Image (cartoon, rainbow, N blue to C red; front, side, top):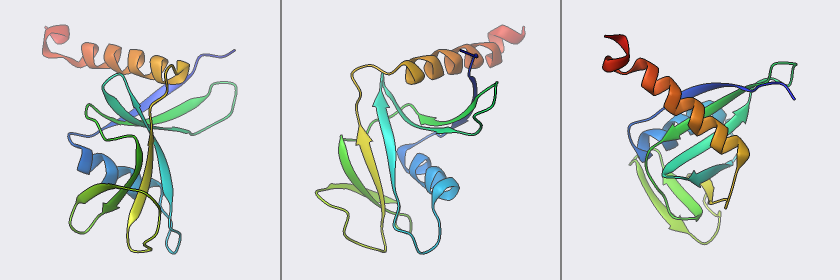
Length: 125
């Protein structure tokens, strides 16, 4: 199996994370619900970009948490709440799941942490 190449988009907060995912993956007139993994202290949305011999995966992440379940997000007020169902066309919805183990998330976190270490001030001095 070929090695997966990860590209990362890191966000400083849960709100920025939700807005960022929405900006990349929503379409006008469609009430999307986007899956989010809650894994090892990160929130992540993992999206394949290619399926070629050298797979590229885009990973949106933030070091934060949300409750497992359906999250309703209002981009105008930047408020989110856990809800029981997807019901309002004026809101954005995310489904937060917490896998017990995920090889793709493990590899993404490992790659992200290595990248951050290489970019730290200590690594450049």
